[in-house]
Each structure stands twice: as C-alpha cells, then as structure tokens.
Image (tube, rainbow, N blue to C red):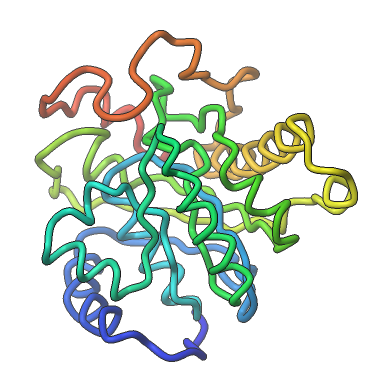
Length: 260
C-alpha cells in the first residue's frame, strides 16, 4: 500500500470511514502490484466489471494505493438527492449511457485527467455478459480519453467479487468468507497510436489493446486461458445495458466462478 499524497475530500473521509470496516471483514484480499498505479499525474485505470460490488472494492484498492479514484458513474445514481449530492461532492462523473449526452462525461473525464486525476473506467461499459464472466469487447470511451490526453492507461484484472454478489443479484452470499484478487499490469503500450491521427481504426486498436491487457491479467488470476474470441454484446441480440434476463436474484453458477 502507498500513503495518499493528495487532499482527501470530505466525502472520501466519510466513505472510507463507513465502507472500509464493512469491506475488510467481507472478504480476504490479495492485492498485486498496486504500486504500478502512478503516484501522481493524470491516468486511466481500466478494469474488468464482474459485480455491482466491485466499484467499492476497486475504490478501496485505488485509495489504499495513494490515489483518489474518480469514476464514470451511470447518471441514474445522481437523480437521488442524497446519493447524487454525495457523488458530485466526491468528484464522480455522471454518464448517460447510450445517449448523445454521453459526450459530456467524455469531456469531464478528459478534463479530470488533464487536471492530474486518476479516472477509473470499466471499458466494457457494463457488467460483462460473457457466460463465464470473461472480459467482453470494450467500448471506445477509455481509448478516446487516452488518445485525447496521452495519459498512461493502467490495466487491472480482478476476480472474486462475483462470489459475494453475482451479476444482477440482489442478495449477497456472505458465508463462507470470500477472497478477492486484484492485479495491476504495466501501462498499455500506446505510443505508436498516439503518434497517429485519431480515426475509427486507431480508436479500435487502442480499445483492443486495453481489453487484451485486462484479459491477460484476468486469465492469470483465474489460472486458465481466456477464450480466443471475446464475447460481443453488440452482436448477441440482447439489450446493451441493464439486466439482460430481467430482474431476479440468481446465484446460479457462482460457485463455479470462484478463483481456484
């Protein structure tokens, strides 16, 4: 772990005081190479998304390695007066997914990176739809921000949060105590693409490199090879965001997805 060397907003003092005592007994942790997150300066931390719990565990991870994380959070969370006020005070960025207004989140994220902030992004844009919870194809947001700012993109792979709260489940599985592993990789090599004009192809290549770096780490954590082809939700015929199977509480298959 690394000491935080920037001012803590009151929201993080409150959040850390409330959430850390809950998260610590919830699961044991293996945190690997957290020092690869830059101690200062604007950066993108790009991570796979496997549970509605993992934004909290990821914030804990980044915070304990010396950075204040800023998230791109779905705009619906900001509609609640209390939650929205807390998120805004914490500097979180609302994004209206699948709408033209999403450009506002892009601009805010670019500004945050240029101001030296650590912006955490889920490149998949939503919880993975891969049946085995492998990282799926990425959206272009992280790539576009990286190409616009030239900042380092730090890939993170995680595994284990889905055993506590499977995707779209409402009730957590607390016993026995679970284990969460997070590992940080080296910055994604993008120098050659940063030297090119930003086009659809350069954005696509940047996105592919980011997702490949994340997937490689996840495969290492799971101890098994990743699929040769990533799940593509745009061609799956299902809805792009939200629960693809409707609202239900399901733990099906969660035991099979635990880190061995």
